[in-house]
Image (cartoon, rainbow, N blue to C red):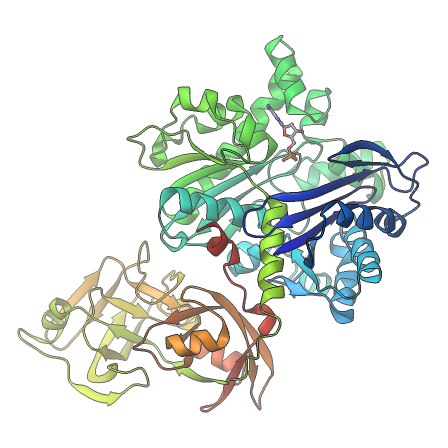
Length: 602
Ligand code: AMP
């Protein structure tokens, strides 16, 4: 499928016709200085063409036909628009209609520099190419899985809610793309990896990816927070900003310009924002340039250490972006002291490594390094094309089946050995009542779960016995018991906290096993065909209840011939949605996207 990918900045635009599967560019155009007297457009075969364009619509009116002409006879299947801010609402790519356009406009206050330009491109392109499907792919979407603890700032909760003040994270398309590439290179499913991806370009951010989900990232409500960037300060004591504002008589716009445009590497070095120049100056003894590099690398190393703690372990660190893919110096400095996390740099490999489209993944850790260090070429246009193709390709699918919803109360799965410790030697679980999933049953046996703070008695054991012990609780239980349980797929207890179980015969203190089960849908392969999804996909489900209509995001698809169609939510989620027995959900067609990149790259 050929997809036109559009990325509109305030005075520039990039357009490319991209093969969604290979990422190959069929044609490209880049326009600079839109709105100024001498706008310029560069095509691959004509790098300095003339253009007069007062705005994005005029620029696109000229560039799109020229670009499509260059793509030859090939038919475009759709248009993918990069949109920086998707706010709370967009955690997946979405087909653009009037309502979506309006929502992107409403998000302008959250991204005043970016969303207006993205929107101008959307409006113009939809007017010029109305017959084609247009899709918005959001920089923030991948971070829709940030847990509340990472999402919230410690400010007045009412004010934060009123003004959408929370951490959203950016560069999500790139973090997701390089994570997928790293997983393919490591020959391991993303769902088995704890990754720290460092996107280091003119804008820079770092992301902690726990088994495929973004759980922390350094950019916040805006792309200003976090790492030192080309011209952005990254983390700064807000008190320092207030002080500079007062002392220099700067108003909010003045501070905005100072922190977004005149800080970072440029502000520290006094030598512009391009790291190549700063590295050259540093090599010649320029102290400001040296300090800029020190601060840049120190900040990133600090984040990697913090994120390793957030993840509770580390399988790979990924460097990407103009700096990450090219600067051996930065990678070397950042990797110092990361041996503590099992990451050992191979200095020779690092010196040579330059990730490119031709050689997109290079390992720069030693053979014995427990955590891999990879240099991975990012390709946001390819990622946007893949996301768009997935959505466009699935458009005609009729997804009609309703999904029954089951509310799962807290429960326990046990190994046979644990059963015997708790209930006595040779004890076999006693089936009490069949559950909806074939072969699964509630048992007569119950246990007391003893947490660090309180305990809960009468917790039901489910059968049959399993290979690992697992205690599934709700968020409310988590706080009641005083245990810090991660959201996980059932069966995945890696790195989760342990807990004490007390039975009639004895007690067991599990080393790990307490999780909050992730929302999921069990389905048979025929259902997966009907919905156009695969095992491991992540979808959205609209709930049609008498209580409160809402959409559950981040719902995992689990496919097996042993399953029958049913969505499982926990008691907290059911209460929030005012769900009752026999309520049903419907798959949101536009959200049935999940992991297009992983599939494309596989
Ligand atoms: P990006 O925003 O991802 O295109 O990255 C652009 C930035 O990457 C430039 O501003 C440079 O600072 C940096 N960069 C590109 N090539 C090199 C290189 N060979 N060495 C150091 N930095 C580089």
